[in-house]
Image (tube, rainbow, N blue to C red; front, side):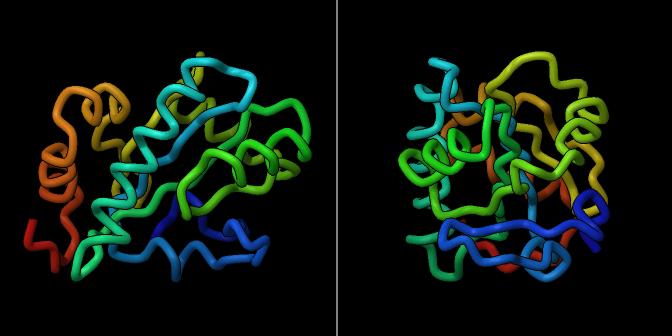
Length: 156
């Protein structure tokens, strides 16, 4: 049960609505607080894309990881443009959902970009996901998975 997004609706890059309980079940979840107007975000997003692609799209079986983009863009249009142009094939909280403010408070987000890696119940594994990916690359996923206490099918 992914309590952090229960009762919310997420979207994918095709604009389809996604049930978070199904999409995030039994996965490590990276909540990616970011914005297109932010140069450090535009710098880190391609790195996160490569990380996600290597683990999820090019691994067999895919790693038990999902990213949820929470936008700090100034409008829906800005968010959609940034999401489509730069982000990986992960999920997003719709820009119009005010829950983003609650998430920013809960995870003490004072600046972007920030990648908070959480367990299914929303408990923080690390709030330094960006630094860990930059410093350790794919190796950091194994420690997140161990901390997540979920059923593992990951061999990496």
